[in-house]
Length: 166
Image (cartoon, rainbow, N blue to C red; front, side, top):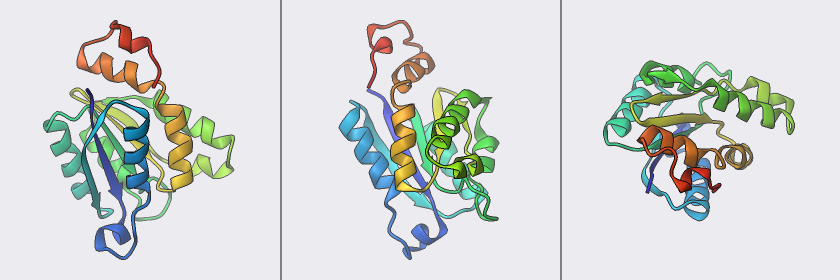
């Protein structure tokens, strides 16, 4: 079973001024559509070191997948991609490119997403937008490839499960 972390990046959410809808939505989708366990879920402020240290700690705990939501746009405080780049060891640009390409079919604003994806040790980290509608759209693209990706990272590639879709 793969362990998943969901990190919401939002100043207002972290301060309690805004109810996070994206993180809980991601957790529900993961729990409803996969056999995986959401092992960590948190909200942090838009601060590079806070984001990076949370991602680092979760990777060190052995999570297989970390999905972030929020902080991927053009606003000055949107720093999730920068924090992610600080800790990843290998880029996985195809994931971010695929998410943007599919999102562009829905809205031209998708080209404003700066989300990245990458690997730290055996953990895949993917930045998603903060909008719940975009979360649904992005996970529809991402979920079918995740079983194989996570099995490759865990060293279990080639098993029967790696060819199933979620």
